[in-house]
Image 1: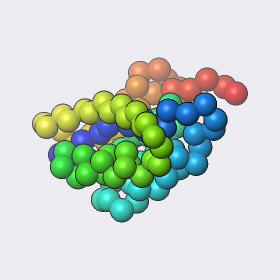
Image 2 (image 1 turned 120 degrees about the vertical axis):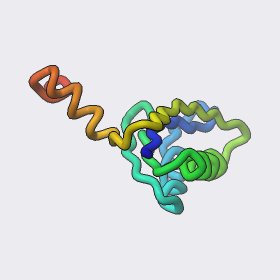
Image 3 (image 1 turned 135 degrees about the horizontal axis):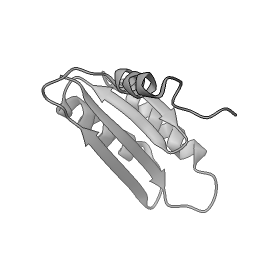
Length: 103
């Protein structure tokens, strides 16, 4: 089974969040997960929900701020081992092109 999630962890501050977001992303390396960060969050893949939630907990805790918001969206499709990359590949096959615009 593969569990895929979209995670967004951010301090509630007015200045740049880059240092604290980097700390959250760095905390994921202590876990058996794969991840890719994009401008709106980080997509995480794990073998099971317990592994995923442990990684998310550490990412949340890694942010050093008076107030931290964490948003988690989980896709736990228990009948398939389809990876995040395979999900994107399926959309691109239908589109007949990459699922992104030209810069």
